[in-house]
Image: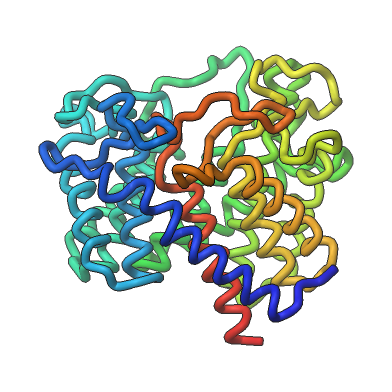
Length: 396
């Protein structure tokens, strides 16, 4: 059944209410580190601090969340002040002065602990600096955003080198980098502008469609050979519905940016259709974390769990698809994923969401924050869904 205008108004109010009254109050002000700067995000169910190390991914992601709040939701100076403490911490502690590469996580006072063999810390820094530049009007941060974006492009092209994740015995290309980079370029373009973004986004969408989307299998592959062929090994047959659907809504967003480009809408919706069919758990509801493209056993032990961020991406994608196409099936999908998620992940006692569920929907562990989870996926989902519906109703 399609959504009525009244239902859309209710959904819009729900997402904004959850964001401002439930999700954000879990994190702030308790997570601000007033001694060293940045954020203390590794939190137990009730907000108790579990660990004071700092994820560099979440320094950038949290700055972006706070700056987006200031830019799009409410010109609240508290959001801007909290964003500044993250930007300052990032500038001071998160870049290796010997080679410029960003760390993966650091101690509370900024001493480096670990790097990774990819550049996702840099991607989240780009969106953080770009959003903060828009919020403050400070050209320094716009310059830094473009500069770090250039670094990302150099890592992608091989001009800058990283230790390879896989050796030449079995070369492959992954979905994760072009998927993330589409949104990085969109955020850079939206907040501070960069003439490179349109062509880069078009290239990465083309590569995802050409190499990763397998229409004959109705699937989107996480890893393929450089030519786009299936790698018929356990780790090569993996499908990650959350990653693919994140790509789908980035593509739908680009369709809107390109005057509702019908080809991009069709591609984004096709990816969503494939991943819904493969990911939706018909027995228990929710989205399975991983599948094998040939329906063989999956090697990863977490393959049948339900992850919070996967459901955030599906909530955005199904809503986007419905508002762009008006098709009833996407309204039905959105109702299912929204209802499942807020019934199972949402912590009604302490706020925010649990991160990890067993297949049957029971809680696997109660922590709200770790190196991979913090104030990003859920607030982004609630902000974007509120904004999508608000724009739709204004233009209807």
